[in-house]
Amino acid sequence: MRRFNNIMTVATLALIVMAGFVSSAALAAAQGESMLYLVEFKATEAGAPTTRDQAIELLQQLIVPSLKSLAGDDRVRAGGLFVGARAGVFIVAAKAHDEVTEFVRALPAWGVWDWKVTPLESFAHRAGLEKNVLKELGGEKR
Image (cartoon, rainbow, N blue to C red):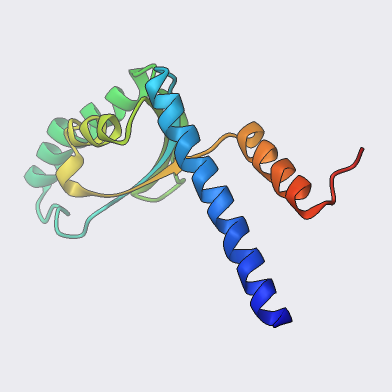
């Protein structure tokens, strides 16, 4: 019975945390606030040039314009390329997941880079959630 109670406590806490995260993201979007997303990208081998002319075309038409776009967009809060690699990361602010998809999809190099997008929550938001969990567990300092 004790094991069942422990499992139920963990499940309940997970549900509380997930509900808080989902409602917070929805509330931020409804209020027009930006959420942050970690965007990771790396060059695909399928798009690798095999000739000098292909390399020039790829760089001129896709890679350089994409990097300039990322460098000049106010929604990109931070980021860069991994030294010596054909990969990088950036953090972008957006009001919704769809906006991030559209942003990434509009980059000229979209088709030659693999993408991974991860929504982020703020440190303050997570601290508030953890404080609520502490309160539920009866461990909150007074």
